[in-house]
Image (tube, rainbow, N blue to C red; front, side, top):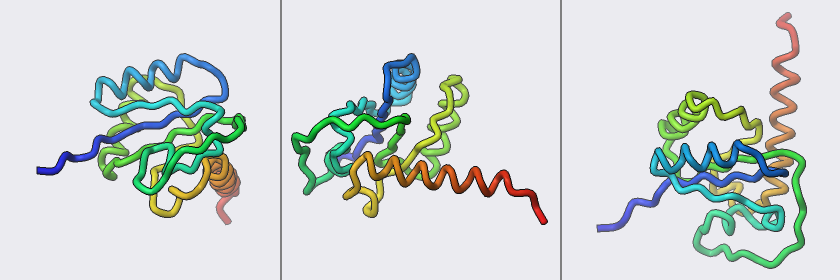
Amino acid sequence: MSKIPMEAVFYYAPAPSDKEAALRTLCARLGIRFKSVAADQTEQKIGALVGLPGFTAEALPAAPLADEVLILHRFADRKIDAFLAAMRKAEIPRIALKAVVTEHNADWTLTALAAELQREHDEFAKYAATPDP
């Protein structure tokens, strides 16, 4: 019988905050693995960060990011919704840049993923601010 892989949350923050401890506590309560991502890991490929087969971590220079990023790995759709609802219930402040690991982004660095998430976030914000005709 094969073991079902555990969901995991990977969190990067540009500076220490209480949010990391709150996320760690929430994950422990929900039985979800939690891992902090350090500034010296931002140039790693997402696949290496989350431990996907075929990816290995490399020694790369630190490249701190300006914004926090939350990455969900091995989450089914309903579990994503449940986790985000649990974050709201626990009153963990919103994290704008969130992603789920996919076959398409596993080869991106965290820096590239964060840039794409920020671009998408900015586009949605522009769209939301545009009045209906």
